[in-house]
Amino acid sequence: MSSKDQRKRPNVDCDQAKKRVWLVKVPRYLSEIWEANAGTEVGKLITAGNNEVKLKSRPDLMVPSELTQAPTTSVASKKIAPGPSVPSEHTFLMKTDPQQTLAVLAEDKAGLEEESNIRTGKLSVEGYVVQRAECRPPNDSSYLRLKIGQIEKSGQPKRQVIQIQKAAVKFKPVAAHHEDLQRQKAKKEGIKTVRADRDVLRQTIFHAFEKHQYYRLQDLQQLTNQPANYVKEILQEIAIYNQTPPHKSMWELKPEYRNYDVQKEI
Image 1 (cartoon, one colour):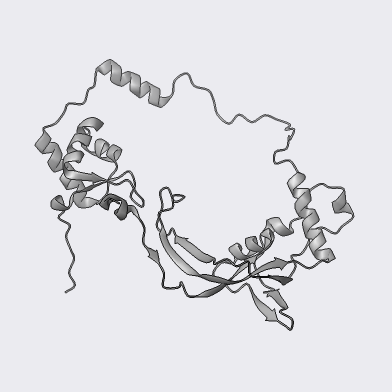
Image 2 (cartoon, helix red, strand yellow):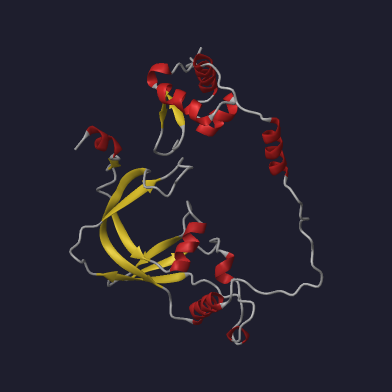
């Protein structure tokens, strides 16, 4: 394996690898409620004899309006009261050990503003699974109304045709847009960008990097008012092109050209 491949391989934090965790399958509506109340206590587990475990949800949890909002038009909604409530108590069905060793691998994507869907965040092992279970809702009328409402909403069309009384003109058509007029004017006047001296352009780029550590090619091209290919030639000599987040597709100075001021505490 080359040194380049070793640099790309991310480090995995294994400090919590010995932590014992449960792997529980929960209904989708319950996971949406937990996501809406992230960072807070969502409920308590109540254990009884014969491995009986129940989940008692906190009564003041913030519930998304999509779960309790009644459908607009439906035949079944006329028979059942609108606005179903979310069950507050669930039962855990414990499963036998499938003779598998499972671990929880988490990825921290904090600070990844660009291309955050790429798996380049900080990886850590949060523990290993010691018990598997399935969270089941109660078989009562409240849960039945909730499921009926979800089925009715899924059957409703996302777009509806509405007849308007008077058409509103949102914009007026124009013969030529402002950008097209400027482009035609530049062609008529014969405006061309004159290449500056390489040393002058290099110093201008150095001064720009004194203000900011990272730049895009188009930003430097607009800042120096020079052709993009000409600016790229200078950047290939004095800068490095980042290909990974969080500063993907941006340039920074090579280590031998960096001279950032370090503020010292007095």
